[in-house]
Length: 167
Image (cartoon, rainbow, N blue to C red; front, side, top):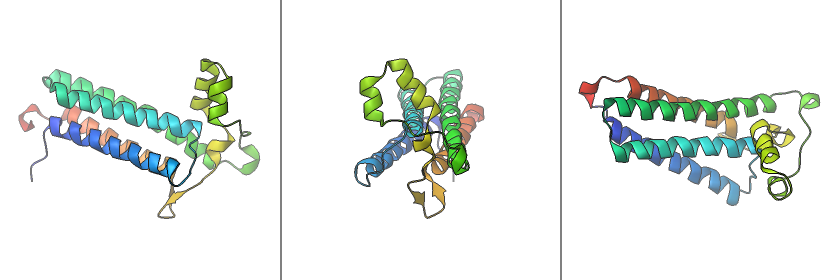
C-alpha cells in the first residue's frame, strides 16, 4: 500500500480537524458539557492546524513550501498540546491545590477587557480541573486531545521530512 502524497494527507488532516470540532460541538450542545477556557484554546489550535493543512492542500506548493506548511501545522499542534498538558496537570492536582473557579465564559466575554479574557483562556481555572467525561471510561477530554495532537504532530513531521520522490 502506498502512502498518500502530502496534498492528500493535508486534506485528510483538515477533514480530521473538522470532524474533531464537530465532535466537541456535539459534546457541548447535545451532551451539554460546557467547555472551559483551556478547552476553547485547544479548539482554536485544532482549527489553526486544520486551516493550515487546507491552505497547503489547495496551494499545493513546491517541496520547500510543503515543508513550511507542515512545520506551521506542527507548531499549531505543539501549542495545542501545551494547553492540553496544562489542563491534564490541573485535573491531576490534589483538590486542595486546584485554583478557584472563575465566572462563566459568557460573563467574562461580556464584562472583562480582551486581554483579561485572553489571560483567562490561556491559564485556566478550577473549572478546567473538573473531569466531566471520559472516553471509554479511560481518557478525559484533554487527555484525548493530547493523543490527537501527538498524532497530528507525527503526521506533520512525516510530511516535512519525507523524501520528495514519494510525492
